[in-house]
Image (cartoon, rainbow, N blue to C red; front, side, top):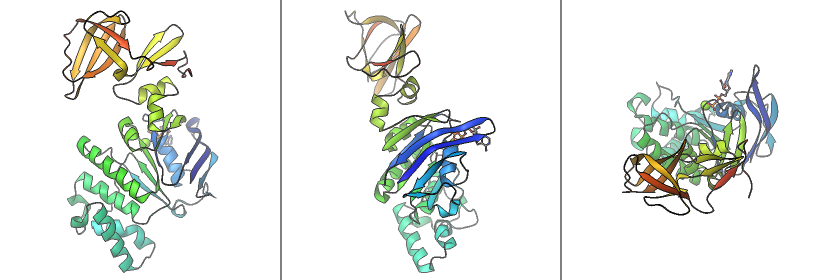
Length: 327
Ligand SMILES: Nc1ncnc2c1ncn2[C@@H]1O[C@H](COP(=O)(O)OP(=O)(O)O)[C@@H](O)[C@H]1O
Ligand SMILES: [Mg+2]
């Protein structure tokens, strides 16, 4: 459906995107995940046609669109800043993409009513953007993007301006909406929880390169390297250097005991964090630190002795360069 092949983009001597190949199937929700500066926005701008790649091709529905004008790509975008027209009502903002395409007034009115109802905006159509909350404005931006049923959606950190609670709420709405519309979506975020919850597949990026492109479950359970292992999951995977091998253990796979166990290593409680539904416990063993996820109510005193062990079959192994050692 959407296929990127060997996309490279340089700004002067800097390679912002390096030989990225990525394909998305019809109706698929693909998330680009990576730290700030890794090239996510540049890649999105290339797909949208706002930047030209130095190398590589983009195909959408079997057609090469690499050099095509942005307006001829049939791709809709939603960005972090909602970019609504401040002097237009919500009604006019949502209908705008159809008005510039000179659709009949009756068709526009019906389409606006339809998407507004779908996004819970029906009561706000006569308002101006400044009369709306951040969450409502972001919904208007979404409504404007979906009104003309594009071939693909691009969303670049669309929820990052919202407060934490609203972000989680909108995340669920977005996921449901994408499921209903079944339009291929490329979604950018630096938030691993957003990536895990929304994506059919996640492309984890670092320094302009894709590290791993796989399902959320595989990215989580079979990370290809220590970067992916530590970027996905919260708290992060423990990495323990062990001779020439680095052991990786997720906090939920660390078991603690207050009494000595034959197959467990001794350590001391550094700190405990009660989260309500669980308790995060940090253990110090010499110079290394191990984070464990424990049931709610687990009680450990500062500096008290503790024994930790890793659940069998749950230890990841990486070589000294950080690459996963296939078992
Ligand atoms: N127009 C530009 N000119 C020069 N450098 C740029 C430009 N756009 C992006 N970059 C650089 O390319 C790299 C990737 O940026 P960007 O795609 O915005 O990353 P992200 O969206 O992942 O934070 C950064 O080092 C950034 O400074
Ligand atoms: Mg960006």
